[in-house]
Image 1 (tube, rainbow, N blue to C red):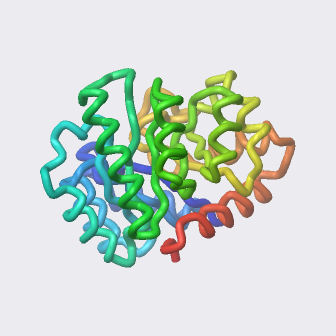
Image 2 (image 1 turned 45 degrees about the horizontal axis):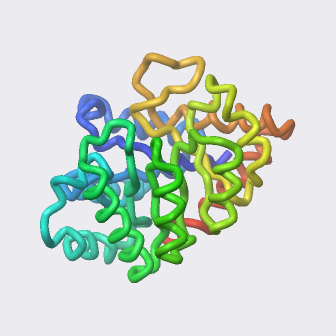
Length: 253
């Protein structure tokens, strides 16, 4: 089967000792493509370097809400240069995180809105982080008139998922769905043509790997749980969510 891990952070130093093995293990088990997600300018460059080295890896470039406070004055110009590369497939990870507030809420909001606008200008999708900021995330999407994106690691309510889908955005699910029962109805109600699968490696390892470093191989566990919840075959879930990802990430070839 042709799985895609649409969101992983395999540039992180937790993979420095065995990155080749992690990527090869995924490929050997049918995870044919992985998208390495940047969270600031240095990590976006690392993602691009990994994508250049490994044919099965693609990259994004963006400023995560945690890093908004450190965004340099010309960060939009620097990001724009990344998007010229054929393997940089999205603007992200962007968004809002009012749980940790590592950056001031005003700073986060400014950088989030600026990147929504940037994504429109470069005609790429956004990969959006949303934590305890549902209303503000939705308002940004509506105000920017940018409905071309995905809420990654969706972890909110069924009502919010339906509001997000109405904007044109997609939802992406992680190993959380293997142990957070409140997400089961969201998965059941989200059409496969609006759904993608991810690991968010090295975080959020699914059952039966909880507590360990997560890796792209484990996207298979996410697919298995979706299939169980939707009473479908894993093969159908993988085919349809992979097709969704291919249509969504236009440069993912």
